[in-house]
Length: 67
Image 1 (cartoon, helix red, strand yellow):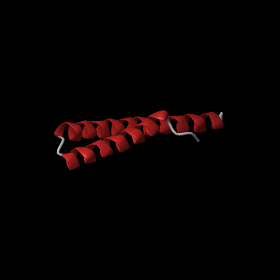
Image 2: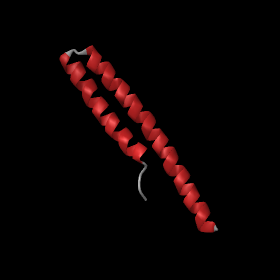
Image 3: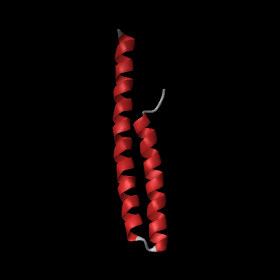
Image 4: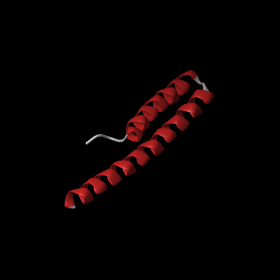
């Protein structure tokens, strides 16, 4: 079963956000830290949306299998 594109995009955003945040901390760049934290939060939310979509898809498939 394929994963939702929101889950994939969310994972990418979380990873990129974590990298930005780490570079910001290492270089003392507060703006980059905040940008990274925001991108991580966006990725987390997008991942949750994707999980809900996947769950709905599985329920729909199970229902259709019964018909």
